Image (cartoon, helix red, strand yellow):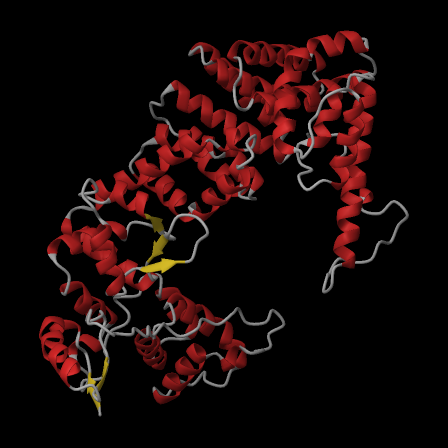
Length: 553
């Protein structure tokens, strides 16, 4: 015998009390129950009904490909026809349909309500209005239950089933963009000092939050439609400002603690950068809150500390926009924040080859770090200023900043990023000699770099499978720069080879870089399905880089 029960979520206790003795005494009875939350009975199996699969973007060529076969798109097309829309059948409009279905998270009710709007709204207009979903998706069938006539009422039905404490937590969690960890939830929740796990579990059971597969810490997320409802209730409760402040403070502290500059020098650099990439939507939300509230110091500290993240993960334009806005404000800013913001923007402008502006900001950052006696800041900022002045052609200024950065580094002792900065300075010294067409004898250059050798050797020992010792290993490191699994830091080690001048080291570093690039591009061409065009010249990929051979680090 099969017993069917529908919409049990608002009667969980009563339904469980009914079914428990029935199932125990009547072994032939099977129960199929629909509910937004489990009944928590022995022998219960949960089958989650996920939203409809989201379509991929329509073909750039204008063809519909497999988009029209997607269930979410098909539902939208079907309900649009039922509404009498005139655009149905226009394959060129599928790109808009795809965006609409993605914005609606594949929720069938949301798609149906949006499709009904196409009787009075063109697709582009509907797509643009979905920046805010809830006000638009109303007016469902009159014969449907009240909770199924609008998306807001549908979500409110689940929200109203929560306890007051669970509702407070749900509102707090809606401030996260792109997901959150349990640690982040504890930091941002209004009562984060208590154990949140039971309430997190309750929200997941109600499908108001969803666990995300992750190799690291477990993450949760909200569908954007549900998150919009949560933010709406958060503002109505008067808790929005405090919650956003805690959110921004948590991610500000997280970025300062991780310090992408230091992270780039550590074996776990990739994991740290991946963590920052995962949290990127939250980082942007934190920066936006700091901007909205006029916290210019906080914004400059956060955006400046993200410089290496902006660079290594390809977000230079975004980072530049935040930093330029912060530095342009006529507001009282703390000296450390101003110095960090100037240093960050200087680095971005240097990478984008706007050398004069990069040098101006780099020098300003050095001056501020001097004024507050921040030795670590001086070491980093003088390194940036040295590179910018080198590209600007002022070799005397370059030499001065190299010496200043080196002196600050020596005063710091065994900093975790000493090896990286020593490598930068060695690179800069090599290019300085190259540009100056001469330089000190090998003994002198080796003596000046001797304080850098120990942290560099320690760093290489962590990064390579065999110990680095006498000079015979330097040739092995050169080969590893081409063929190793971690080629990034190794070419820079040529700057301090004991057997040769800095000028010769610079030549070897540049040639090994081109060989490594050539091998990578050749491997890409041989990879199945590769779209890399065949090599057309004898020099290969190096031709593509010839215009920047003297401007990079």
